Length: 93
Image 1: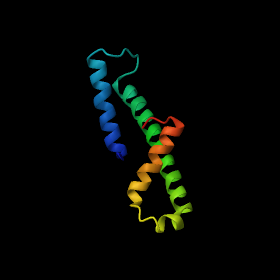
Image 2 (image 1 turned 90 degrees about the vertical axis):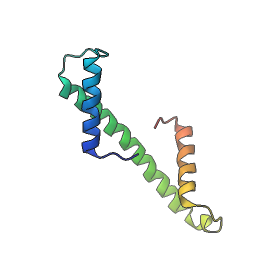
Image 3 (image 1 turned 30 degrees about the horizontal axis):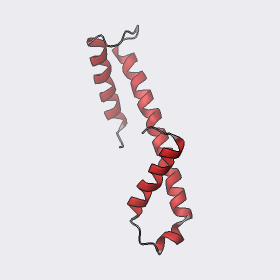
């Protein structure tokens, strides 16, 4: 799922506020500092998925000729390859 930077920042602020208000975490930082940390982790994880997507696209392009005769839906094939790479590499998305 693709989220805009603004959406990630808003979600991070809400999550940080909720965690701090419910005292589910203890932190010396103010809400904004916690929100920035949460947003940084989300951005990092999204980058992992984007790199994986690019790798799947490269693989699909590499085998494009073979796929033409197979009459496989490109979107379905993309998801299948991505799922296999996630499994092989123990990636959590």
